[in-house]
Image (cartoon, rainbow, N blue to C red):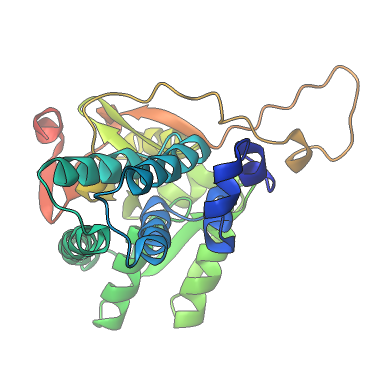
Length: 298
């Protein structure tokens, strides 16, 4: 999905009735982490459905339409089907106030993320240098809260091309006073080797593996080679019982890699990958710290 993704998804008149600037920006965003996108989606729905009732078929259809657009724009993020399933189940039980339902969901999400962040902070206390990849909002929150609580460490990360969200994360952390070493993606092995711990987020996980920014599997392999702990920091909105199937939209503009068109060159520019749990040592979900042997029992 590129900058015009939202407009390409809008093929029906109803789409333009719900396409606020905030929702369009959410559909087009390919940098923000899953949790950040989920909070923004909750905000969009809350604003739209304030003073509306879900007892009307029209309102339910609008909710379904919101979901169809966001799930098409971000098909490899489990947060959207999980929220939609929650709303459908609550509506089926006779609950009609969507803003109250969204508020309850957000409250539980806040608590679950806070619990995971607290567990991660305890891990960080034993580290001098931490490596992270891409820009997980939950990982960022854990790093910042640990730092503000007095835990001291440095961070290593790589650019995370082509969007370069790793660069933006480095800037955020550095402005807080944290020492950050920013590596090129090609120098990832050096970055991981020098670190005590690798911590990443995830957009989707199931009993056999997880989805994250492409390059995460390389970080995991390197961590395994050097005997480093590899930690996934998540919450249960990312959990599903099956692996993702819709990878069709994970094809992005070749111009992000090669500006001009050259005969006989085909650019492949995927953003995500499926990663088995084989090299993961720890998974923190809703404050529960699971070891590798527990992953299949999530």
